[in-house]
Image 1 (spheres, rainbow, N blue to C red):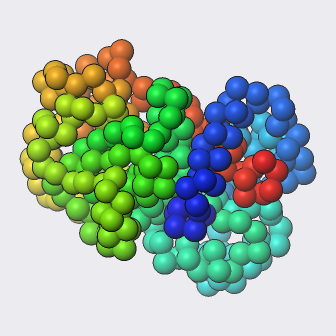
Image 2 (image 1 turned 90 degrees about the vertical axis):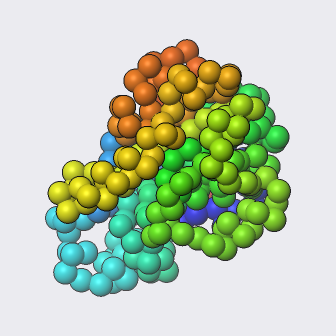
Image 3 (image 1 turned 135 degrees about the vertical axis):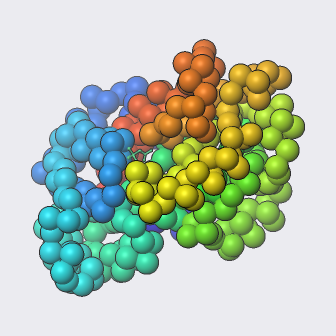
Length: 302
Ligand code: CP
């Protein structure tokens, strides 16, 4: 699962519904992954993706291996060859790679399902948890309106893709486009559905939103990088008028979402994170339940 391109809306909805079901009845799935192993390969840092998939495998009766890319021979060999080997020893691979191109090679080489744990283009596991959280709150996704405010990035792409597949309305307010994330084909498809629109009128966009969502303005691998300091400063200056804060939300009754990690005082104000309408921590908890649903689906155990 690189993104949702090859997933029907019905299948995506099934995974979302399964995630809700698994959340309420975890004991039914205690042995679903008996004797199964998940390899988790990380080229970049992670809290939620790593923890949720590792705990998911444990709670499903299986086993997960955390593999730091830098400690493996992926660094000195061909991604294709190393994946050929790996997929002969495990039942599934979940990976966070810097380049979607490497993920494509890995998917081609693997004999077992490969899950995209976030690359520069997509973050499908996050979008499934997000849609699950929205469905829990509203009881449905059709006609619900999500407003994404921030940088047009990998998370934004997967939200657009997930929303159009589930007939959820999505408006993006993204003054900056992260070029490595660009997927014109996806945007073209999204535009044709009538479910996706983009605007810079942030005040108007949030007025009738059911959910307002934001994400970091700087990709995780660049956040502390001194070489990226000038670009970071430029982005902060340009994006500050789009911060999610009390003033922006004064005419909105929307739930507030963020995929985390949060940068308090930048893309979102402290007060909003702690407000009664914030569902950020529930959303992050749902990474676990949705990880289970993804594994159950891909390993034919659902
Ligand atoms: N949202 C998310 O993917 O969190 P991590 O980067 O901590 O995995």
